[in-house]
Image 1 (tube, rainbow, N blue to C red):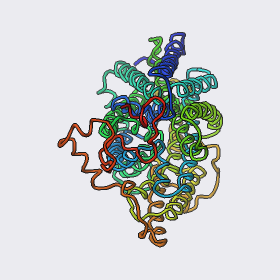
Image 2: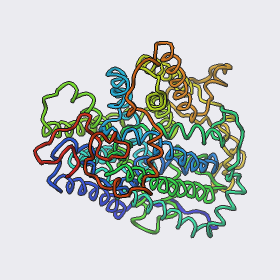
Image 3: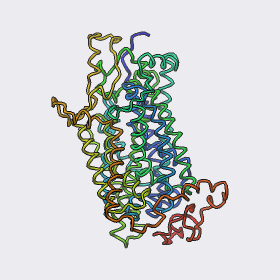
Image 4: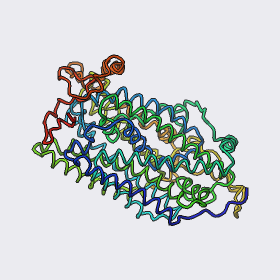
Length: 611
């Protein structure tokens, strides 16, 4: 191979491709603002009038959690720590199965807009409020990171204007969320998944062409020890092993798929429960596809730079920038393709941010506005939802400014989800799976889980774990035609992973830090969930939880699982979505929302189901 030329820069065509992506997203928003009579009610705006089908919802679910953090973070993760990341394929399977078979049936049969409504039905107002506040804090923090991360990485490699990009994405997102509601969110996501796959594909294909085939890429990866799939070390302190990924990953992602409003809101907006489950299972295929793409990109990165690591060689200043660097390196002869990749990273951002904004608006309206102002008409609620979308869009852009002070991004994002998502998952599991749990137990459990996971999480940010726990693989620079030579490559293994601004330097390592704070970041969520469940059960039993009388609808019952097989018996019954008589108990009744929503509004649509 000849000595690598200097990498390319952004040209006009790249900006054109990027702008086109933003414009199409905005156009979809405008279309759904006026299509079908516009957003008449808050139910239309927040739930797409419960009329979505499985495939677009599945793609939308995939898009939201494949944010730019995935597009930029996963390949560099694979480049530095090896392909063990692909074991996540197994956790994704468990996550989807749990969400579809445990959480979905209960939420769907109750016909709720906000998952936190469930907490009030099952426990009381106070628990619902705690859940809502935690969710709002978590989502705004996370969204800030998601907007800022790609802007930073792309800015440093391509010279793409940093705050211009942050504000542009924030504004476009807020724009189509405010105009088009959930339908616009779902359909822009479908478009953005297409862009993401195209961006990944262009990188993989071109890398394979330049390196001489996928086989060369795999051979290089094998020689560099990057194909480390089998690490069955049960030690919970090691960052990624088979067990931390399968167990920890399952808990972390279930807290996102099973109970996080931005996901649940979309699969509940399906026509029938069958469509809702189907959307989750189709989305599993999407998750696998994106995972495969990003792992392949990571191996391509390694194959291209295995003897000259741009990070150690000071060509890029953070691992997140390796991917844009590769793109400008191999795609520089094709004007427009680097732009496609940037559009791909930003599609990830847009889809995540838009679903977050829509979910935040839904939660605020359902949990904070409706209970206190009962007299509001549907029309004004719809306006309030739109106002909320604007407000949260602005807040998220503000958070992005704050995120510019925080460190290593993929880790930070997942730790936030773990620290807050874990206890919330525990809370919902307590409600759905434990018949004797009561509200006192739920509150104490939530508090305990939250304290424990914050303690570990913040400890790990302050005293990052040592390299023998995170196990980065060696990177070499002896192939670079640069001034410093082979002597330099030893320093790579000692680079601390967390580059957080809050790190405490030069402190003595104590046993507490080496063991408790070095817990794999994937276990934060597991810890929070288990502490919440355990404490909740304990306190509920001691405060007379067995005596209370609970409506069966709020629990997961045998019928919920067995009704999966109704499809073979009475197909007609499930797929027709006319309201069945109320005595039906609602186990397989898609339009089951006679709990609170029997008002016929001016369009003669009854509670969002078109009759």
